[in-house]
Length: 305
Image (tube, rainbow, N blue to C red):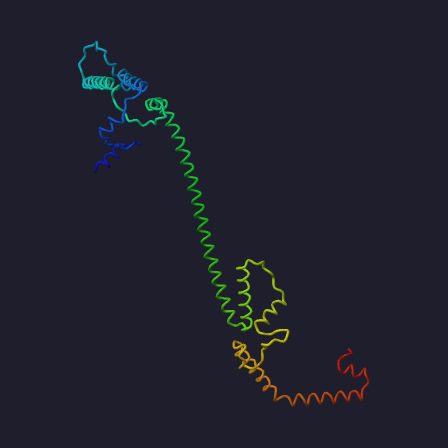
């Protein structure tokens, strides 16, 4: 067991660890000064009280009294006499050296000797200890409150981080869903969405007030993107895919032209049938007009119930 463990084992109560400071003799001679007269009187009273009372032990008689009864000296008596002799020598030596004994000057120039006297006043020490204990209790309570507040803030921060993660996941999911939906949009609708996004960005940059677009504005914006104008313009859209004014619409126009040609080819075979059905309907109408009255014709056409 080392020295630190031994000291810890010896002291089972709260204590201050010893601290040694090495101070040079020149510092002591230049800066240290004897105590004021009032402080010397307080120290002298403490030492004289030690000589008379000696730790408030009732079994040890005051110094200077003689034993009247001649009894056999025990080990305790010898220890008591040694104690009396040691205390008397130490107190006499301290009382003689006290006027010349230097002490560190911790007081500020603006302070008086009463500040130094407080270190040798038992009542003042008790009051200072009580004040420090009150301050310590208040600081400990404040420390507990702050720790509880920190724990609450940490829990709130954890909840905010979880909410942020959830919102980020929802944003990524919605962005992915929007990309999937935009893949099936018409090219003109994609251009309209891009135009709307660009206009919103311009409004944010210029800090312009937001205006809800009407149906007419949306139609005009789509027409402007597609190149369709209400008035005759120099650049018009035609079904010619080789037109150089709108090369980005050439694939779309080609697709539309092929679709129309496919519809025309599909309906070419039934055109004679449609023409014959139209002629038969005309002949039936002429026959009904010649043979039936107006009420009968209305009933045949389902106009009268």
